[in-house]
Amino acid sequence: MRKLLIAGVSALAALSLVACGDSGTESEKSGGADTLKMGVAGPLTGPNAAFGAQLKNGAAQAVADINAAGGINGKQISLVFEDDVSDPKQGVSVANKMAGEGVKFVVGHFNSGVSIPASDVYNENGILMVTPASTNPKITERNMWNVFRVCGRDDQQGTVAGNYISKSLSDKKIAIVHDKTPYGKGLADETKKALNAAGITEVVYEGINLGEKDLSALVAKMKDAGADLVYFGGVHTEAGLIARQMRDQGLTATLMSGDGIATDEFASIAGAEAAVGTLMTFAPDPRKRPEAADALKKFKEKGISTEAYTLYSYAVVQIIKQAAEAIKSNDPKKVADQMRSGQEFDTVIGKIAFNKKGDVNRLDYTMYTWQNTGDRVTYVENP
Image (cartoon, rainbow, N blue to C red; front, side, top):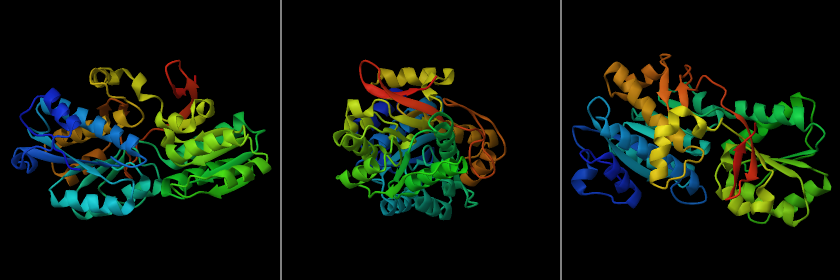
């Protein structure tokens, strides 16, 4: 699953190389003295491939643009893609492979449960990892020099969700469901914590298994409990099945979830009727930022969707470049120190600075509702 973006080609040709899946010649794969190896790691195949595509597309466009402008400290970026299939063990294998290939910076991973063990490998091998999408608090709570994220945290996201429910939907009976992963259970538990602190007790709290198809027993339990709002911690595949099977069994409860469903594939799985009205927490829509206009134009010209974490992945590459050039060094540890220095970075998702843990210094969540926009069912930021 490895593909490279090499020096000496135009930005457009470089992006086409990645998109077409051309792995290049052996000499191109090896990189060179004037190239800087950067990896993109995420679920390029499997049920979460839609999110892997977001990471891949965002990073590839950023690298094409930066290489066209001279690279980082005079070095062209050689881009390596690896598929972790959303599996922690495969994530560790991917991390070891990239370490062996001399990768210095990693954009990824997507799943928190993959980012956590993979980051240990990167730490041991002197590799800087910046995740565009992993939100579990543990990722940045381990005092590791090499770990950053440009997204928010689940203790923030869960608080936003819980506060929204307690203020706007306090008369609802709440069921809380999660997929037992560090991301899904973590987010559900943070939402539960916020609800319980507001004096709201859920009527159902259940975990489901990843890949589980028949959720009829869960839906029946929620129906018997009178649930009219279902909060789900997990990703779009299981969320879509829950929404569809609730409607099939006559449970008209509103579904609410987090950034793990921020792909139009959620509506494809749930069905348009079941998806409409779903509530979701995510960052303020980065596509509305003026800083993103030029990048959005390039994505549009290539027919690439800019859902969810596409621009976040683009921003990761921008930050690495700006930090490296501020200190005139491509050494990952020195770049990490600069990222924690308080420097404010100009990115397509706005100005970003990091705290000492490696988290962004802004609250990055708001509420969305899934709507039929005429051409498709998708998520729309609440006014």
